[in-house]
Length: 98
Image (cartoon, rainbow, N blue to C red):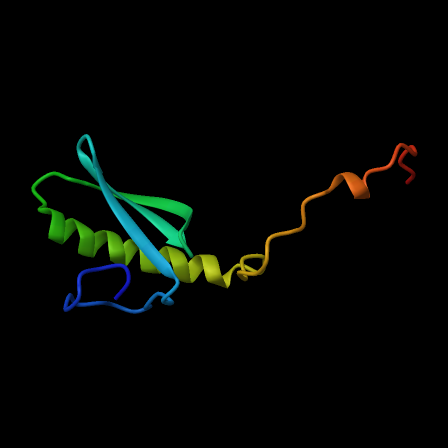
């Protein structure tokens, strides 16, 4: 699984393969940066008290999978090409009209 160690138990929903997770430890919490095609989309966290890194990673992966499912259910979240940036050729000195 792309969000957790191989062989760990995974609850539903499973994340698509292009979603990954980078885990960090900050102060008294574990933080996972959830990424789509290598681009950060969100951060989820849990308290680090009495948890080892492997247990925290599994818990964060579960939270990340649920966030991804909710994200993909949003009408405007379908991954696609980024909107085109305005170029100098598209700019005009004419006043904007309504």
